[in-house]
Image (tube, rainbow, N blue to C red):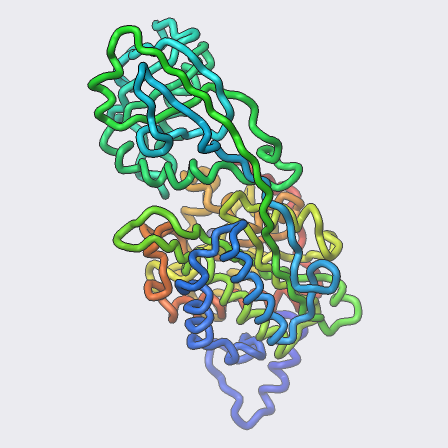
Length: 496
Ligand SMILES: [Zn+2]
Protein backbone atom coordinates (compact mmCIF):
# COMPACT_ATOMS: atom_id res chain seq x y z
CA UNK A 1 0.00 0.00 0.00
CA UNK A 2 1.55 3.28 -0.98
CA UNK A 3 1.70 6.41 1.10
CA UNK A 4 -1.05 8.18 -0.80
CA UNK A 5 -3.55 5.43 -0.10
CA UNK A 6 -2.71 5.16 3.60
CA UNK A 7 -3.25 8.88 4.10
CA UNK A 8 -6.61 8.71 2.40
CA UNK A 9 -7.64 5.66 4.41
CA UNK A 10 -6.87 7.51 7.59
CA UNK A 11 -8.98 10.39 6.40
CA UNK A 12 -11.89 8.18 5.41
CA UNK A 13 -11.90 6.30 8.68
CA UNK A 14 -12.87 9.54 10.41
CA UNK A 15 -15.55 10.40 7.87
CA UNK A 16 -19.20 10.00 8.83
CA UNK A 17 -19.91 7.99 5.69
CA UNK A 18 -16.79 5.86 5.65
CA UNK A 19 -17.61 2.61 3.94
CA UNK A 20 -16.25 -0.73 4.88
CA UNK A 21 -16.81 -2.42 1.54
CA UNK A 22 -13.96 -4.59 0.23
CA UNK A 23 -13.47 -2.41 -2.81
CA UNK A 24 -12.16 0.58 -0.93
CA UNK A 25 -13.17 4.03 -2.10
CA UNK A 26 -9.49 4.94 -1.92
CA UNK A 27 -9.06 2.98 -5.13
CA UNK A 28 -11.20 5.51 -6.96
CA UNK A 29 -9.19 8.23 -8.68
CA UNK A 30 -10.67 11.70 -8.15
CA UNK A 31 -12.23 12.50 -11.53
CA UNK A 32 -13.57 9.06 -12.39
CA UNK A 33 -17.18 10.22 -12.34
CA UNK A 34 -16.38 12.90 -14.93
CA UNK A 35 -16.07 10.17 -17.57
CA UNK A 36 -19.49 9.45 -19.04
CA UNK A 37 -20.83 7.02 -21.57
CA UNK A 38 -22.69 9.88 -23.26
CA UNK A 39 -19.55 11.91 -23.83
CA UNK A 40 -17.77 8.90 -25.31
CA UNK A 41 -20.70 8.13 -27.57
CA UNK A 42 -21.13 11.73 -28.77
CA UNK A 43 -17.41 12.07 -29.46
CA UNK A 44 -17.30 8.81 -31.31
CA UNK A 45 -20.28 9.58 -33.54
CA UNK A 46 -18.73 12.97 -34.34
CA UNK A 47 -15.32 11.54 -35.17
CA UNK A 48 -16.41 8.44 -37.05
CA UNK A 49 -19.40 9.98 -38.80
CA UNK A 50 -19.86 10.18 -42.57
CA UNK A 51 -18.56 13.76 -42.81
CA UNK A 52 -14.94 12.76 -42.08
CA UNK A 53 -15.21 10.13 -44.83
CA UNK A 54 -13.04 7.55 -43.12
CA UNK A 55 -10.10 9.89 -42.35
CA UNK A 56 -7.58 8.21 -44.67
CA UNK A 57 -3.98 9.17 -43.82
CA UNK A 58 -2.61 11.90 -46.06
CA UNK A 59 -6.02 13.08 -47.28
CA UNK A 60 -8.01 16.21 -46.61
CA UNK A 61 -10.34 14.04 -44.50
CA UNK A 62 -7.58 13.12 -42.07
CA UNK A 63 -6.55 16.77 -41.90
CA UNK A 64 -10.12 17.94 -41.23
CA UNK A 65 -10.49 15.38 -38.45
CA UNK A 66 -7.12 16.48 -37.07
CA UNK A 67 -8.14 20.15 -37.04
CA UNK A 68 -11.35 19.19 -35.28
CA UNK A 69 -9.37 17.32 -32.62
CA UNK A 70 -6.94 20.21 -32.21
CA UNK A 71 -9.90 22.49 -31.68
CA UNK A 72 -11.29 20.07 -29.08
CA UNK A 73 -7.96 20.15 -27.23
CA UNK A 74 -8.09 23.94 -27.25
CA UNK A 75 -11.66 23.97 -25.92
CA UNK A 76 -10.65 21.62 -23.10
CA UNK A 77 -7.83 23.96 -22.14
CA UNK A 78 -5.01 21.52 -22.87
CA UNK A 79 -1.73 23.31 -23.59
CA UNK A 80 -0.52 23.10 -27.18
CA UNK A 81 2.51 20.81 -27.30
CA UNK A 82 3.14 20.30 -31.01
CA UNK A 83 5.54 22.38 -33.10
CA UNK A 84 5.97 26.10 -32.65
CA UNK A 85 3.36 26.59 -29.94
CA UNK A 86 0.58 24.80 -31.84
CA UNK A 87 -1.32 21.55 -31.29
CA UNK A 88 0.11 20.20 -34.53
CA UNK A 89 3.20 18.43 -35.69
CA UNK A 90 3.04 18.15 -39.48
CA UNK A 91 5.07 15.60 -41.38
CA UNK A 92 5.32 14.41 -44.96
CA UNK A 93 4.06 11.11 -46.30
CA UNK A 94 6.16 9.92 -49.21
CA UNK A 95 3.99 7.93 -51.57
CA UNK A 96 4.90 5.85 -54.63
CA UNK A 97 2.35 4.20 -56.85
CA UNK A 98 2.00 2.48 -60.21
CA UNK A 99 1.23 5.19 -62.74
CA UNK A 100 -1.82 4.94 -65.00
CA UNK A 101 0.55 5.38 -67.95
CA UNK A 102 1.71 1.79 -67.35
CA UNK A 103 0.81 -0.80 -69.99
CA UNK A 104 0.42 -4.59 -70.00
CA UNK A 105 0.15 -6.54 -73.22
CA UNK A 106 -0.26 -10.32 -73.44
CA UNK A 107 0.06 -11.44 -77.03
CA UNK A 108 -1.98 -8.77 -78.80
CA UNK A 109 -4.39 -8.40 -75.88
CA UNK A 110 -4.04 -5.10 -74.04
CA UNK A 111 -5.06 -5.48 -70.38
CA UNK A 112 -6.72 -2.65 -68.48
CA UNK A 113 -4.79 -1.85 -65.32
CA UNK A 114 -6.59 -2.96 -62.12
CA UNK A 115 -9.62 -4.16 -64.07
CA UNK A 116 -8.11 -6.99 -66.14
CA UNK A 117 -4.71 -7.05 -64.46
CA UNK A 118 -3.91 -6.47 -60.82
CA UNK A 119 -0.37 -5.48 -59.97
CA UNK A 120 0.54 -6.49 -56.45
CA UNK A 121 3.89 -4.83 -56.02
CA UNK A 122 4.85 -1.18 -56.31
CA UNK A 123 7.94 -1.20 -58.50
CA UNK A 124 8.86 -0.14 -62.02
CA UNK A 125 9.44 -2.79 -64.69
CA UNK A 126 10.19 -3.14 -68.41
CA UNK A 127 9.59 -6.73 -69.47
CA UNK A 128 9.32 -8.39 -72.86
CA UNK A 129 9.42 -12.13 -72.28
CA UNK A 130 7.86 -15.39 -73.39
CA UNK A 131 5.08 -16.73 -71.15
CA UNK A 132 5.62 -20.15 -69.66
CA UNK A 133 2.51 -21.75 -68.19
CA UNK A 134 3.66 -24.26 -65.60
CA UNK A 135 0.41 -25.45 -64.08
CA UNK A 136 -1.29 -25.10 -60.72
CA UNK A 137 0.16 -23.85 -57.46
CA UNK A 138 0.76 -26.61 -54.98
CA UNK A 139 0.67 -29.27 -57.67
CA UNK A 140 3.37 -28.52 -60.19
CA UNK A 141 6.90 -29.42 -59.09
CA UNK A 142 8.21 -25.93 -59.66
CA UNK A 143 11.77 -26.69 -58.64
CA UNK A 144 12.48 -28.84 -61.73
CA UNK A 145 11.36 -26.28 -64.29
CA UNK A 146 13.76 -23.84 -65.89
CA UNK A 147 12.07 -20.46 -65.44
CA UNK A 148 15.01 -18.24 -66.26
CA UNK A 149 14.06 -15.30 -68.46
CA UNK A 150 10.41 -16.40 -68.55
CA UNK A 151 7.15 -14.73 -67.56
CA UNK A 152 5.86 -17.60 -65.44
CA UNK A 153 2.10 -18.22 -65.36
CA UNK A 154 0.50 -20.28 -62.59
CA UNK A 155 -3.08 -21.13 -61.86
CA UNK A 156 -3.76 -20.50 -58.19
CA UNK A 157 -5.71 -23.34 -56.58
CA UNK A 158 -7.13 -23.47 -53.07
CA UNK A 159 -4.48 -25.19 -51.00
CA UNK A 160 -3.01 -24.90 -47.55
CA UNK A 161 -2.80 -21.08 -47.37
CA UNK A 162 -4.02 -20.18 -43.89
CA UNK A 163 -7.08 -17.95 -44.28
CA UNK A 164 -7.89 -18.13 -40.60
CA UNK A 165 -6.19 -14.78 -39.87
CA UNK A 166 -7.31 -11.16 -39.77
CA UNK A 167 -7.73 -9.46 -43.15
CA UNK A 168 -7.29 -12.69 -45.13
CA UNK A 169 -8.23 -10.90 -48.38
CA UNK A 170 -5.55 -8.26 -47.79
CA UNK A 171 -2.92 -10.91 -47.21
CA UNK A 172 -3.83 -13.40 -49.91
CA UNK A 173 -1.62 -12.18 -52.74
CA UNK A 174 1.31 -11.82 -50.34
CA UNK A 175 0.76 -15.34 -48.99
CA UNK A 176 0.78 -16.78 -52.52
CA UNK A 177 3.87 -14.73 -53.28
CA UNK A 178 5.69 -15.96 -50.19
CA UNK A 179 4.74 -19.52 -50.85
CA UNK A 180 5.42 -19.76 -54.60
CA UNK A 181 6.48 -16.44 -56.12
CA UNK A 182 9.65 -15.44 -54.32
CA UNK A 183 11.38 -18.68 -55.17
CA UNK A 184 10.48 -18.40 -58.87
CA UNK A 185 11.91 -14.90 -58.99
CA UNK A 186 15.03 -16.03 -57.15
CA UNK A 187 15.44 -18.67 -59.85
CA UNK A 188 15.30 -16.14 -62.65
CA UNK A 189 11.63 -15.63 -63.60
CA UNK A 190 11.29 -12.09 -64.99
CA UNK A 191 7.54 -11.77 -64.34
CA UNK A 192 4.79 -13.72 -62.57
CA UNK A 193 1.24 -14.14 -63.78
CA UNK A 194 -1.10 -15.59 -61.17
CA UNK A 195 -4.47 -16.73 -62.46
CA UNK A 196 -6.94 -16.14 -59.67
CA UNK A 197 -8.91 -18.92 -58.03
CA UNK A 198 -12.28 -18.23 -56.42
CA UNK A 199 -10.68 -16.72 -53.32
CA UNK A 200 -8.30 -14.66 -55.42
CA UNK A 201 -11.31 -13.31 -57.25
CA UNK A 202 -13.08 -12.55 -53.97
CA UNK A 203 -9.91 -10.77 -52.74
CA UNK A 204 -9.47 -8.78 -55.95
CA UNK A 205 -11.23 -5.56 -54.83
CA UNK A 206 -9.33 -5.60 -51.54
CA UNK A 207 -5.99 -6.04 -53.27
CA UNK A 208 -7.01 -3.45 -55.85
CA UNK A 209 -7.82 -0.84 -53.16
CA UNK A 210 -4.46 -1.42 -51.49
CA UNK A 211 -2.28 -1.67 -54.57
CA UNK A 212 -3.76 1.36 -56.34
CA UNK A 213 -2.72 3.37 -53.30
CA UNK A 214 0.85 2.08 -53.50
CA UNK A 215 3.41 2.48 -50.72
CA UNK A 216 3.79 5.10 -48.01
CA UNK A 217 6.61 6.01 -45.67
CA UNK A 218 8.28 8.93 -43.94
CA UNK A 219 11.76 10.18 -44.69
CA UNK A 220 14.40 7.74 -43.52
CA UNK A 221 12.06 4.72 -43.76
CA UNK A 222 12.69 1.65 -45.91
CA UNK A 223 10.05 2.62 -48.48
CA UNK A 224 10.87 6.33 -48.61
CA UNK A 225 12.99 6.26 -51.77
CA UNK A 226 11.35 5.47 -55.13
CA UNK A 227 11.33 1.68 -55.57
CA UNK A 228 13.86 0.04 -57.84
CA UNK A 229 12.89 -2.16 -60.79
CA UNK A 230 11.56 -5.62 -59.92
CA UNK A 231 9.87 -8.45 -61.80
CA UNK A 232 6.18 -7.53 -62.04
CA UNK A 233 3.65 -9.71 -60.19
CA UNK A 234 0.35 -9.62 -62.05
CA UNK A 235 -2.96 -11.28 -61.15
CA UNK A 236 -5.42 -12.22 -63.88
CA UNK A 237 -9.06 -13.25 -63.67
CA UNK A 238 -9.88 -17.01 -63.73
CA UNK A 239 -10.94 -16.97 -67.40
CA UNK A 240 -7.34 -16.23 -68.38
CA UNK A 241 -6.75 -19.97 -68.11
CA UNK A 242 -8.61 -20.28 -71.45
CA UNK A 243 -5.98 -18.33 -73.40
CA UNK A 244 -2.79 -18.15 -71.29
CA UNK A 245 -1.64 -21.58 -72.54
CA UNK A 246 -1.57 -20.45 -76.18
CA UNK A 247 1.78 -21.30 -77.79
CA UNK A 248 4.27 -18.49 -78.23
CA UNK A 249 2.51 -15.87 -76.10
CA UNK A 250 4.63 -12.92 -75.10
CA UNK A 251 4.24 -10.60 -72.09
CA UNK A 252 5.10 -6.96 -72.64
CA UNK A 253 4.82 -4.98 -69.43
CA UNK A 254 5.90 -1.42 -68.97
CA UNK A 255 5.24 -0.29 -65.40
CA UNK A 256 6.02 3.24 -64.28
CA UNK A 257 6.11 4.72 -60.83
CA UNK A 258 4.92 8.15 -59.84
CA UNK A 259 5.69 9.74 -56.49
CA UNK A 260 3.86 12.24 -54.32
CA UNK A 261 4.26 14.00 -51.01
CA UNK A 262 1.23 14.53 -48.77
CA UNK A 263 0.83 16.16 -45.38
CA UNK A 264 -0.15 14.24 -42.29
CA UNK A 265 -0.14 15.47 -38.72
CA UNK A 266 0.15 14.46 -35.08
CA UNK A 267 -2.14 16.37 -32.70
CA UNK A 268 -0.53 17.01 -29.34
CA UNK A 269 -1.86 18.54 -26.13
CA UNK A 270 -0.35 18.78 -22.67
CA UNK A 271 -1.65 18.84 -19.12
CA UNK A 272 0.93 20.00 -16.62
CA UNK A 273 1.58 17.90 -13.54
CA UNK A 274 1.57 19.40 -10.05
CA UNK A 275 4.87 18.16 -8.65
CA UNK A 276 7.82 20.52 -9.18
CA UNK A 277 10.13 17.61 -10.03
CA UNK A 278 7.90 14.85 -11.39
CA UNK A 279 6.01 17.25 -13.66
CA UNK A 280 9.08 17.25 -15.89
CA UNK A 281 8.19 13.65 -16.72
CA UNK A 282 5.32 12.63 -19.00
CA UNK A 283 2.72 9.97 -19.29
CA UNK A 284 1.74 9.73 -22.94
CA UNK A 285 -1.86 8.88 -23.91
CA UNK A 286 -1.89 7.69 -27.51
CA UNK A 287 -4.42 7.12 -30.27
CA UNK A 288 -4.56 7.57 -34.05
CA UNK A 289 -6.67 9.80 -36.25
CA UNK A 290 -6.72 7.89 -39.50
CA UNK A 291 -8.85 5.02 -40.76
CA UNK A 292 -9.13 3.69 -44.33
CA UNK A 293 -11.12 6.37 -46.10
CA UNK A 294 -13.38 5.46 -49.00
CA UNK A 295 -12.81 2.14 -50.70
CA UNK A 296 -14.64 -0.66 -52.43
CA UNK A 297 -18.18 -1.37 -51.29
CA UNK A 298 -18.83 -4.01 -48.67
CA UNK A 299 -22.46 -4.60 -47.70
CA UNK A 300 -23.69 -1.44 -49.42
CA UNK A 301 -21.26 0.99 -47.81
CA UNK A 302 -17.92 2.38 -48.93
CA UNK A 303 -16.86 4.58 -45.99
CA UNK A 304 -14.40 2.81 -43.73
CA UNK A 305 -15.43 4.75 -40.62
CA UNK A 306 -12.83 3.39 -38.22
CA UNK A 307 -15.21 3.68 -35.26
CA UNK A 308 -13.53 0.99 -33.21
CA UNK A 309 -10.24 1.52 -35.08
CA UNK A 310 -9.46 3.99 -33.66
CA UNK A 311 -12.08 6.58 -32.73
CA UNK A 312 -12.93 4.38 -29.72
CA UNK A 313 -9.44 4.91 -28.33
CA UNK A 314 -9.29 8.60 -29.25
CA UNK A 315 -12.45 9.40 -27.27
CA UNK A 316 -11.19 7.30 -24.35
CA UNK A 317 -7.83 9.10 -24.33
CA UNK A 318 -9.57 12.49 -24.60
CA UNK A 319 -11.82 11.63 -21.66
CA UNK A 320 -8.82 10.41 -19.66
CA UNK A 321 -6.90 13.59 -20.46
CA UNK A 322 -9.91 15.69 -19.43
CA UNK A 323 -10.13 13.83 -16.12
CA UNK A 324 -6.43 14.49 -15.55
CA UNK A 325 -6.94 18.14 -16.40
CA UNK A 326 -9.81 18.36 -13.91
CA UNK A 327 -7.67 16.78 -11.24
CA UNK A 328 -4.02 16.72 -12.29
CA UNK A 329 -1.50 14.22 -10.99
CA UNK A 330 2.15 14.74 -10.16
CA UNK A 331 3.53 13.97 -13.61
CA UNK A 332 2.52 15.80 -16.77
CA UNK A 333 0.41 14.20 -19.46
CA UNK A 334 0.89 14.36 -23.21
CA UNK A 335 -2.10 13.43 -25.34
CA UNK A 336 -0.88 12.44 -28.81
CA UNK A 337 -3.34 11.49 -31.53
CA UNK A 338 -1.03 10.17 -34.21
CA UNK A 339 -1.48 10.58 -37.97
CA UNK A 340 -1.18 7.89 -40.64
CA UNK A 341 -0.97 4.89 -38.31
CA UNK A 342 -2.62 2.65 -40.87
CA UNK A 343 0.08 3.55 -43.39
CA UNK A 344 2.76 1.95 -41.22
CA UNK A 345 2.78 3.65 -37.78
CA UNK A 346 4.05 6.76 -39.55
CA UNK A 347 2.90 9.40 -37.04
CA UNK A 348 4.39 7.61 -34.07
CA UNK A 349 7.58 6.85 -35.98
CA UNK A 350 7.79 10.53 -36.87
CA UNK A 351 7.18 11.71 -33.31
CA UNK A 352 9.81 9.39 -31.84
CA UNK A 353 12.35 10.64 -34.39
CA UNK A 354 11.28 14.30 -33.99
CA UNK A 355 10.01 14.51 -30.40
CA UNK A 356 8.55 17.79 -29.14
CA UNK A 357 9.67 16.88 -25.60
CA UNK A 358 12.86 15.03 -24.61
CA UNK A 359 12.27 11.31 -25.16
CA UNK A 360 14.00 10.63 -21.86
CA UNK A 361 11.19 12.51 -20.11
CA UNK A 362 8.53 10.03 -21.31
CA UNK A 363 7.95 7.77 -18.33
CA UNK A 364 5.11 5.72 -19.81
CA UNK A 365 3.08 5.28 -22.97
CA UNK A 366 -0.52 4.09 -22.74
CA UNK A 367 -1.71 3.36 -26.26
CA UNK A 368 -4.87 1.68 -27.41
CA UNK A 369 -6.21 0.20 -30.60
CA UNK A 370 -9.83 -0.91 -30.90
CA UNK A 371 -11.44 -0.96 -27.46
CA UNK A 372 -15.18 -1.01 -28.07
CA UNK A 373 -16.19 -4.42 -29.37
CA UNK A 374 -16.48 -8.13 -28.53
CA UNK A 375 -17.71 -9.74 -25.31
CA UNK A 376 -18.70 -7.11 -22.69
CA UNK A 377 -16.49 -8.60 -19.97
CA UNK A 378 -13.32 -9.38 -21.92
CA UNK A 379 -10.31 -7.27 -22.86
CA UNK A 380 -6.58 -7.54 -23.32
CA UNK A 381 -3.52 -5.57 -22.37
CA UNK A 382 -0.65 -6.17 -24.76
CA UNK A 383 2.97 -5.76 -23.82
CA UNK A 384 2.36 -7.59 -20.57
CA UNK A 385 4.14 -10.81 -21.54
CA UNK A 386 7.91 -11.29 -21.79
CA UNK A 387 9.99 -10.97 -23.88
CA UNK A 388 8.12 -7.95 -25.32
CA UNK A 389 6.84 -6.81 -21.92
CA UNK A 390 8.54 -3.42 -21.59
CA UNK A 391 7.94 -3.06 -17.87
CA UNK A 392 6.70 -5.44 -15.18
CA UNK A 393 5.96 -2.45 -12.93
CA UNK A 394 3.73 -0.85 -15.54
CA UNK A 395 1.97 -4.16 -16.22
CA UNK A 396 1.21 -4.46 -12.52
CA UNK A 397 -0.29 -0.97 -12.49
CA UNK A 398 -2.63 -1.95 -15.32
CA UNK A 399 -3.54 -5.26 -13.65
CA UNK A 400 -4.22 -3.53 -10.34
CA UNK A 401 -6.28 -0.85 -12.08
CA UNK A 402 -8.35 -3.59 -13.68
CA UNK A 403 -8.90 -5.35 -10.36
CA UNK A 404 -9.92 -2.13 -8.62
CA UNK A 405 -12.16 -1.04 -11.46
CA UNK A 406 -13.74 -2.80 -14.41
CA UNK A 407 -12.54 -6.33 -13.58
CA UNK A 408 -12.33 -7.46 -17.16
CA UNK A 409 -11.46 -11.06 -17.76
CA UNK A 410 -8.14 -10.53 -19.48
CA UNK A 411 -7.17 -12.51 -22.53
CA UNK A 412 -3.53 -13.59 -22.44
CA UNK A 413 -3.32 -15.66 -25.63
CA UNK A 414 -3.09 -12.64 -27.94
CA UNK A 415 -0.05 -11.29 -26.14
CA UNK A 416 1.91 -14.49 -26.55
CA UNK A 417 5.01 -13.91 -28.66
CA UNK A 418 4.01 -16.76 -30.98
CA UNK A 419 0.42 -15.56 -31.56
CA UNK A 420 -0.22 -15.53 -35.30
CA UNK A 421 -1.54 -11.95 -35.38
CA UNK A 422 1.41 -10.33 -33.61
CA UNK A 423 -1.13 -7.75 -32.46
CA UNK A 424 1.33 -6.07 -30.08
CA UNK A 425 3.50 -5.20 -33.06
CA UNK A 426 0.77 -3.37 -34.98
CA UNK A 427 0.06 -0.09 -33.22
CA UNK A 428 1.55 3.25 -32.24
CA UNK A 429 3.19 2.29 -28.94
CA UNK A 430 5.70 0.20 -30.90
CA UNK A 431 8.15 2.97 -31.89
CA UNK A 432 8.17 4.08 -28.23
CA UNK A 433 8.65 0.51 -27.00
CA UNK A 434 11.55 0.13 -29.41
CA UNK A 435 13.27 2.90 -27.46
CA UNK A 436 12.74 0.97 -24.23
CA UNK A 437 9.98 3.28 -22.98
CA UNK A 438 7.51 1.36 -20.77
CA UNK A 439 4.48 0.97 -23.04
CA UNK A 440 1.16 -0.85 -23.03
CA UNK A 441 -1.60 -1.32 -25.57
CA UNK A 442 -5.25 -1.61 -24.52
CA UNK A 443 -7.47 -3.55 -26.87
CA UNK A 444 -10.65 -5.55 -27.05
CA UNK A 445 -9.12 -7.39 -30.01
CA UNK A 446 -10.16 -7.99 -33.59
CA UNK A 447 -13.58 -8.76 -35.05
CA UNK A 448 -14.97 -9.47 -38.53
CA UNK A 449 -15.78 -5.76 -39.09
CA UNK A 450 -12.11 -4.77 -38.69
CA UNK A 451 -11.07 -2.57 -41.65
CA UNK A 452 -14.53 -2.66 -43.24
CA UNK A 453 -17.37 -0.09 -43.51
CA UNK A 454 -19.15 -2.06 -40.80
CA UNK A 455 -16.66 -0.74 -38.24
CA UNK A 456 -19.19 2.03 -37.63
CA UNK A 457 -20.35 3.96 -34.55
CA UNK A 458 -23.61 2.04 -34.15
CA UNK A 459 -21.65 -1.20 -33.73
CA UNK A 460 -19.73 0.00 -30.69
CA UNK A 461 -20.59 -1.28 -27.20
CA UNK A 462 -20.59 2.03 -25.30
CA UNK A 463 -20.96 0.49 -21.86
CA UNK A 464 -17.86 -1.52 -22.52
CA UNK A 465 -16.05 1.51 -23.96
CA UNK A 466 -16.81 3.40 -20.76
CA UNK A 467 -15.36 0.54 -18.70
CA UNK A 468 -12.25 0.48 -20.89
CA UNK A 469 -11.87 4.24 -20.44
CA UNK A 470 -12.19 3.86 -16.67
CA UNK A 471 -9.45 1.26 -16.80
CA UNK A 472 -7.15 3.51 -18.83
CA UNK A 473 -7.80 6.45 -16.52
CA UNK A 474 -7.21 4.33 -13.41
CA UNK A 475 -3.89 3.12 -14.85
CA UNK A 476 -2.93 6.65 -15.89
CA UNK A 477 -3.72 7.94 -12.40
CA UNK A 478 -1.31 5.41 -10.92
CA UNK A 479 1.25 6.25 -13.60
CA UNK A 480 1.23 10.00 -13.02
CA UNK A 481 1.44 9.66 -9.25
CA UNK A 482 3.84 6.74 -8.68
CA UNK A 483 6.90 7.75 -6.68
CA UNK A 484 9.16 6.04 -9.21
CA UNK A 485 8.57 5.89 -12.94
CA UNK A 486 8.18 2.29 -14.11
CA UNK A 487 11.47 0.56 -14.80
CA UNK A 488 12.13 -1.02 -18.18
CA UNK A 489 12.64 -4.79 -17.96
CA UNK A 490 16.32 -5.59 -18.39
CA UNK A 491 15.53 -8.59 -20.61
CA UNK A 492 13.01 -6.72 -22.78
CA UNK A 493 13.21 -7.80 -26.43
CA UNK A 494 11.08 -6.91 -29.42
CA UNK A 495 11.45 -10.19 -31.23
CA UNK A 496 8.91 -12.32 -32.94
ZN1 LIG B 1 -5.75 1.10 -35.42
